[in-house]
Figure 1 (cartoon, rainbow, N blue to C red):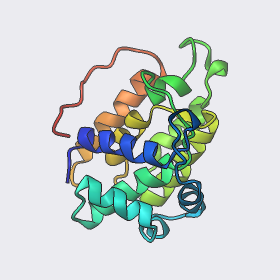
Figure 2 (figure 1 turned 135 degrees about the horizontal axis):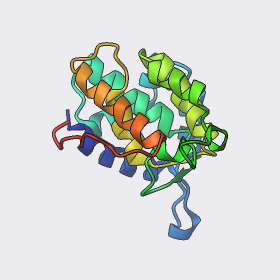
Figure 3 (figure 1 turned 90 degrees about the horizontal axis):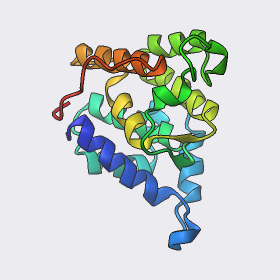
Figure 4 (figure 1 turned 45 degrees about the horizontal axis):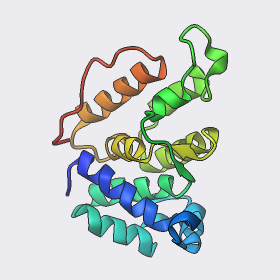
Length: 184
């Protein structure tokens, strides 16, 4: 399996290949995106050809890696535009730390997102988050976070905690205390 950082790069390329882009004369695969959007569980996502192609590109070799990559595929199917340069947590957080009303994702909902642990719960929660953001999020940042987020079958709970802490810092627009390493 690739590192989380490498997987997030692969995810961007995979996602771009599915997106229609008239400027590049690229048809994309709207049918595949629609099938992925209709899947309501990780198991259903694993039955889709596009998910299997993504798993192969990521070098997934275990059940946990399959599920994490399927989660990424299922959430990214809802993304319509790549908002490069803006971390997802910063995008959904309040404009000013003392003005919670300006947040796309209100603090209570954000807290519930932080508490999601199972693959299927993460799938539902992050799809809602993408919809709150109007379908435009940083694809690489989202993929990077999703590869560590679920605690189900987790071999590295510290990675999940680091990602959650980083999201909290970015949500409230405070300094990030830890930088993820390249081999995560």
